[in-house]
Length: 389
Image 1 (cartoon, rainbow, N blue to C red):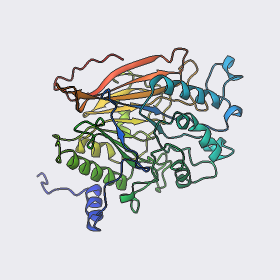
Image 2: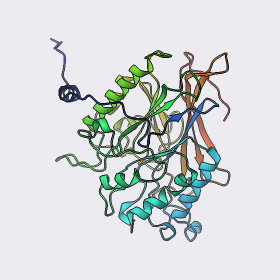
Image 3: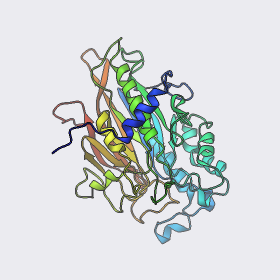
Image 4: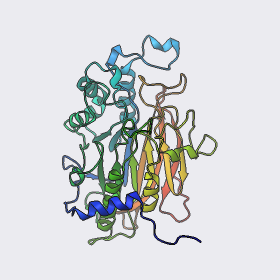
């Protein structure tokens, strides 16, 4: 006989226990510095993802996995040059670093390494945010100390952790950014696109579980509560919208559901190595599906995977390896992922809510080639939206 009694999961128990302590906090500001992010007057918001720079000591740090003819003139400075070129070409509204920003094991001075790694983003004066991978803390600084330094750098919107969750959340660098409607439009004070950044940790600290870390129950609770708050605000007066604003999630280590795809079954891109996820499934993918707002997840970690595949309405996307002091594949260019959200344009020449989310990749070749352009999500019932690049 089937047991029809409702099941109480560990996540449900956590939701209850934290709720009982009475979390009553003001909403998280749009950024640690109070800077408001908005869609541009063209009705777009563009994000550049930089995955796995593995920056070390600059010109003295040689490249990995390039052709022998390239070795003598290839270093961390190639990573810097690539970033400067792709920023100039794409002119993003936000730059997102998805971990392993520095390669701690080879770093002489972690602070100088971070200064150099983020220098092109800082010089561009474009807002940027960084989360941590499994190598950022492997020099002389802890993960908290690394994030404490990042949040003090110019133009960053990174947070050590969200203020309302700082007393319970695992990891460092968890935060949410709200992307508001076009300035001077009726939706200028409403978040139309929500970005979630989470610390996926480094290595398991749980006995009998080896390998990489994972996104913890406390982080899932914070995401769940933040998503629900943003949904309430999205539907509030003035100018109430219907449903939930779409969201994007960024973290470093992929969850096991990335294993569902290979080069053939993915929508775009390739798989060239196994998914190096945690040995345990945290259930975060299930949490995202249950909430329904996050349309795409973007990770790094596995440098020579760059595919996107859709599972239960969520796109699972790799950024592809960016840095030259990181394993890669000779002849397979380093790359960056670009994501653009487009707003609906109404008949009066003003902008509404999000119409679609699309992506492509830029290669570090002579022409900064664009590949694998695709629409990840659209609010159109037919799902058929065509855009020029």
